[in-house]
Every structure is written in C-alpha cells, then in structure tokens.
Length: 389
Image 1 (cartoon, one colour):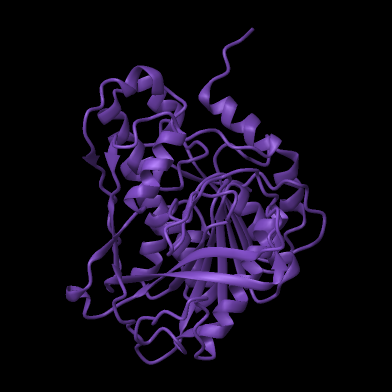
Image 2: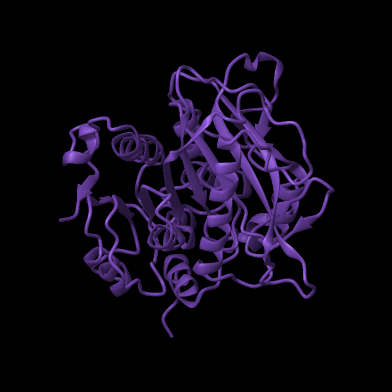
C-alpha cells in the first residue's frame, strides 16, 4: 500500500468532513526532545493604525445548539479587531490563551508546554480610532477543528488599515475558551451550513453594534468608540477551508455580505446557485482543476471574480501556520520533509507578504471602492502569484 502523505491525508480528511490533528507529522519522535516552552512569534501588520481587540460571548436565542444534548441556545466566542488609539496602556493579546493552547497541543500529541503562544498586535480593550466615518466590517470563519485565531496575520493586517474584523469560534468544531473558564474542544464536525448559520447570527450582532447596542451576552463594557462605529452597509467575509465554503453559503443566503474571499475552500457540498457579488478564490490544493465542487462554484460566480494561486502553496499556506510551523518544527525537531508537508515549498516570508497584500486589496476594492491594481493581473512584486483564467 502506498504511504499516505500529510498532504494527501489532509485532503482526504477534509473531503470526508473531518479534521487532521494539528501535530500529526513527526509528533512521536519530537515530543521527547521538548523540555520547556519556547515562545513563537507572529509577523506584525503594516498599516498605519495600531490594533485593538476585544473578546465577546455571543448567545443566539433564536437557535438551539446543533451539538447540544440539552436544549441549550447556540453560544459562540468571537473577537473584534479594529484600528485603535492610545494603545500604550493596553497589553497585547495572545494568539491563544495559555490553558487553551495546552489543550490544543496535547490534542495533537505534543506536550502541552512545547511552545508559548505568540503575542498578537492587538491591544486588548484599547479605544477605537474612528476618524470621520463608520468603519467597514469583515467577518472571518475558521477551518474544521481549528480556532478563530488561525488567520490572525490577515485579520490584524486588515485592522491596521482601518477595518473592523470579527472572528468567531464555531463551538463544537473549534478549540474555544469561555469567560467562565470552560474549554470546549472539537467533538463532531459541523457542516458548512452550521458555520454559515453562526456567521449570519454574527452579522446580526454587527448590526447591533452599528445601532449602538452591546451584543456581549454578559454585558461587559466594550472599548470606547466600538458601539456605533461600524458600517453595516460595507460588510465582507472571508474564510479558510470549511470557513471558505461557509463564506459562499452566507453570501448566497444573505445580501448583507457584499464581497467574499475563499482561502483554499473545498466548496462542499457543491454550490449550484448563482452568486452576483464579488468573490475571489485563493487556491492551493483545492483548485478548480482538482475539485469539481470548486469548479462548480466558479461557474456560478456571475459578478466580479478572480482566482489566484501561489506557486508552492499547500492548504495551510494562507493562514498563520505558514509562519508559525517553521518555528515550531525547529523547537520540536520536525524533519525538513515533515515541515514541507505542512507548508509546501512557498517561502514563509513570501506567504506572509501574500496574506497581507491580496485580502487587503480585495476588500479595499469592493468595500471602499479603491482601485487595488494588484488584482488586475500578475505583479512583479509577487512573481509567485498566478492568475488562473
């Protein structure tokens, strides 16, 4: 029997609707070499604004939790990222809470103290920079059995350029920590439609913020300037993997989202309805040539559309692990071959540059009406990025 590589295992698992543990590759040989936590670092954003962030607990009282054994309402953790001011008095937020990271690593077969979480650019609770207008909003949906911080590089880049970005944990298909100390880990994979239902509720919460209401279920005080500071008429969405499929489903069902971006989404189940608003694919492994469901979506994109792809990219190349895995591999003793299964041959530094540039250009064009020439065709600044006609 042929050996199943990390890449083929990821593709098979996603196609089946399940997830592959974070640290499958090389975990047994590496674990014994780890004795104490070493800090990881996350690349910072390039925009003019410092970044703030705040966590929210959201409860959808119109919907029962699809995974609950009791009649509980659907409960979600979310984070809001935004351009901030006067950040000196506010500590930067971690990529993941320390106790949750321990669970995350142990679930993957690594020691819980293998690494320390990187610090993000987001200053927890800092006041919002408002300027002269309400701020455009982007919502993010993560991949299967992951967490809402898995695209923080993109999220904090957008916030540093003046966007409010809302990220959400899809409870039951995510590693999530609630304010009362509860840690909920993935149990059963939710479908993309469940992700989409979560996001549509988050859009309701965005509208609450726009009206000056606090959507936090515990009524905790929000950063100054957040209530009333978002523009519900300029909303975009992006997602990675299953979250990318959810992005398309949300746009088909809800016209509040004006533009959508897929980070290597498998687009399952197949989408058969036309979508008339801007949509962009950043493909890697789930390409139109390899996946009929992605080609099917492309045929139904009747508005502005683009398909770009970075040479050497794999499924995780457009999220944070492209930058974090090389550091993690060095700490735990992962081989070069094992690391390539995770990040492909796309240079991590170039991957970060792509993550910063292309989502920003997409939302600038379609939420702010800016030219964004980067999306018009191949650029000498990004020779590894191809436009797929």
